[in-house]
Length: 219
Image (cartoon, rainbow, N blue to C red; front, side, top):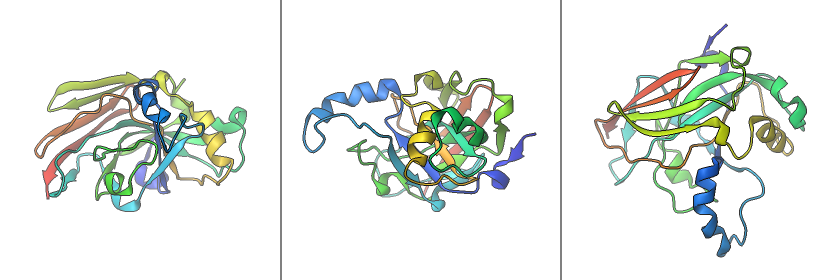
């Protein structure tokens, strides 16, 4: 049975950067230079703080002090029971379900070290109204994902292109910290992010999960 997001996705919002193959490949040259020297070997995590939470159909503030803002279509994974040092083989037993997420961000200078100022503005993380139970999704790694701006398709990808699968993410993250019931893993945004402006209607669509709509409103 589908449940309201506010009932089950009540915990911390964990984002994962560089988790689409195309995006990672497009940034590989940067990792040849200091201070990195090599691509990341563990998930690059960031947190969308509680002030970023937003809902379907709600306005997203366009900050007055920025020139560019980018939506980030993403698959959200809702943790159904606490996960600590969980193996990849057992990880999916800790998943309650899935939802559509739009992980808004300012353009970033470094994907390796996501900036709080770019990620954590008010209203920058709309979540779909319903969580789709894991039992209703045969394979969360084959879901087409699309972004529309004012009705025009601007971005298209699939969760088949994740660098780390959902079980891998849960295993690697729960190795050093407990994921709690109600936490949400935002599994990554694909390459090709687009700029949006005040007044734009932004829709994220994930096949099998539905659509999430946001309208940009100038502060």
